[in-house]
Length: 139
Image (tube, rainbow, N blue to C red):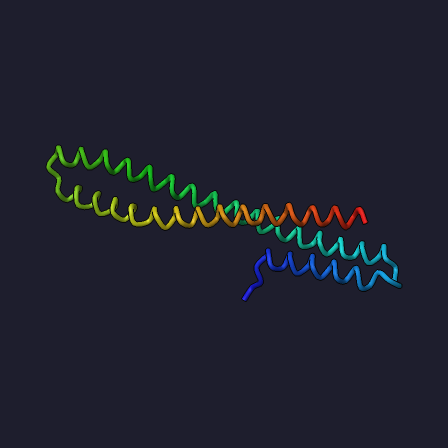
């Protein structure tokens, strides 16, 4: 199973800090610190890439919700016209499609909420990694 990005970041930062402390004694401390910073930069790039994918996914879900809501509204208007014309066949089709839309919307809204939570988590991870990187760079 793929390791979550947050877990990987924590592991890299913890491992990097432990590695720096244990290896800094006799070796080239600047080279070790530079290597650790490069590892943190790599993790940061991965988190930013994942955040970009997540934002794109969130955009697609939002567009799908908007499209379904517009279709639902259009169907309501068509239902009124079909009823005035006495077209039960059109009424049945429109109501069936509206029910389908109403079934899809909660799942999409749940997905959007989940993506929003993941986005917040990744933004927090980026903030933490950048702070740790700056701290390492100052050392």
